[in-house]
Image (cartoon, rainbow, N blue to C red):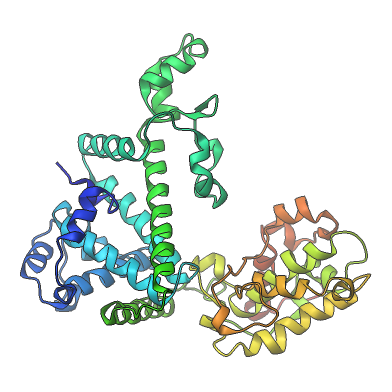
Length: 441
């Protein structure tokens, strides 16, 4: 049977593995058993010695490297990491998981790109592993793990964090009077009056089955990973000096992420990476131009804070965020915050001044909210030491603009081809670069 900890490192089985580790310095020691397992894993492709993790620290970094490469390299070859799908790696893998989570906690904190990458990595590695299991092993693990995590009457409110973070939607779940239904017998009993002339088993498989159980399990483990990082981070703030091993591993994590961001982009002409570059106001979408001219009616605050600030900061610093789909901080692309101070904030402040009445005249505190939307916490000044206290908000999509700020939406021909104002900006920049499009069309 496949070990529970292979999927859920937070299980009692997983925690016992960590307790049995002993001396933390052993994570640097060459591990013959790990090397042998990697070499003899089914379908494993050993290109060179560097592709083999020789100790637990190297395994931890390979684990994260697998996720980033799988996500961003169109030519990703899973055979180079087949050992990660081998259930026999469980004991080593669990320790690698906790090493990564703790290193990220003490060096980067819970609101960092590293923390998000860690949670996403765990979600994807679980998804990949479950996909490799036999039907029998898959059903056994799903029922066993969920049975231990969801006890008794499961109300939808226990998923409050998952719902608020949009990891799960209420529409994904089958409920009866506020209780989530996962068991087939309970499903049949709850909905038998509505299943006339229908096969209850087929309806259960269609609406719930293993796919909903897998979704719930996956998102719960991702949430637990985020919660664990937060928990360790809070403990690390009690003036306790972090273990040097964890700090060294944190440096390795930064190197893995940085290398991957540079190495795996998009290829081709108009679809190549859109690097950070000075603004071209001429190709801003109509909605952005409207806000830059100043909002003369309702929606002034949301237009400046929730709409314009994310758009300008991403358009200037990370325009292809939706193509790469990698979470960064502003300092990753503007290390000294020069573009923020000299280009982005002045443009936002000018738009705020043109509002009627001027935004900061009666609500000066909104400058703090602008800083928060760029990831620098609720502070009056933007400083690197506060980065990560809040999330760098991504730009609103067109549907959200139509819903919350309908007065901004005055579409032109290009708008009909895109779904986000930032995509509009990229398309028009590419038109200029490759097709010399007349800006007045």
